[in-house]
Structure formats: structure tokens, C-alpha cells
Length: 237
Image (cartoon, rainbow, N blue to C red; front, side):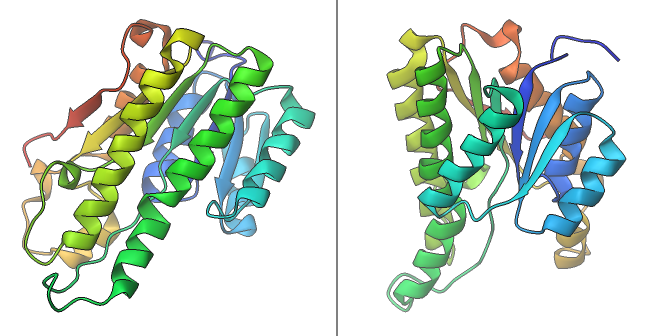
């Protein structure tokens, strides 16, 4: 179906995950051209076949600058440029109190939630500047970025650091026609979260499709005047 993203080149990281698949489906409905990024090539190939739009599935480690640079080169060769980045990659791990924790949990959370934002969003922004693209970058953050909590220092700190990157990039790029914003979900209704919290009221959680719609809004022309926000998508959680 034709829409405002028809023909746009959209890179979706974490594309094979629960949220990533919802984001891919949201843009595919409007016949966007997609760069599908995750770690598992087989899952990406299957997703590309299911999506049935012009796509480039690419297994990439987003903490490696050289690998991300090669990804962008491949996207340029295939599509010419990238219009939109939807960055959904992230991870969660509880920990111990700060006075008992070792550095490993902080390193893991930074590797999942911080460095991929710096490396991937930075590389795509550079690409947009070099190609004169008036584009959009949307990063999935977390409500946990807003405040520390007991036994979650590594996770909350990594998400807060990612949020500061989004805000800084927004200030740096807005005069170049590039919008950078974040989406701030509460608990997302995924099979993994249901398994981890079986006694929760799932009806209060955010559906992946709702987060995907928020990402699509921030990537759309309707959000051209919005820079550096963390859009809260909480449902009733």
C-alpha cells in the first residue's frame, strides 16, 4: 500500500526481534525499501522473504565500527542512500547493588544499549550529511533511562547514556535537516517478558505495534519540527 514512506530507504536494526519485526511490518505496509539488520542472517533472510518488499538483509555486529561502515556501504550500493534509521537494538540484565557489582555487567549493558547507538547512529548521521539527506533517526530507549533503581544501576545508566546521545545528536543535526528523537516504552508485551513476569497484567503493557507507530510518527514529515524528544509510550504500565 502506498503511503508517506513509499520508496523511502529505511534501516531497521534489531529487525528480527519482536519489536523490530513490528517496525519492519509498519514500514513495509507503505512499500518502503528496507535495510534489515540483526545478528542472524538466516532469520533476516526469512524476514525479508515474508516482508515481500525491496530489502537488504544484513547480519552485522553493531558494536564494530568497521562492520557498520561496511553495512552502510552496502546500503549505498543497493539503494543510493538511507532516509531513516529505526534503531531498536537493546538488552536488559538485572544486577547487584553498586557496592557489590563488578564491571562485567556494566560492560555488557553498555555494549547492548550504549555503544550501538553511538556507532550506528553516528555512522548513519555521517552518511546523511555526506549525501545531503534530510532524514530521521529514531532510537528505542526505555523508561528506565529516567531514574536509577535498586539493583538496576548498569541497565538504567546505559539507557540514560543512550538518551543523552540522542539529545546531543538532535542538537548537532537539526540545522542540517536531520531529526533525531527517541521512543521511551514501558514494558513491551513480548513472549520473553511474559515468561519473565507471568503474574503481571499484560493488558497494561505496550504492544510492539504501538511502539512501531510511535517510531513511524517520529520518522514522518509530521514530526519535522520535533528534535531530541523521548516520546513516552507507556499504555497503562
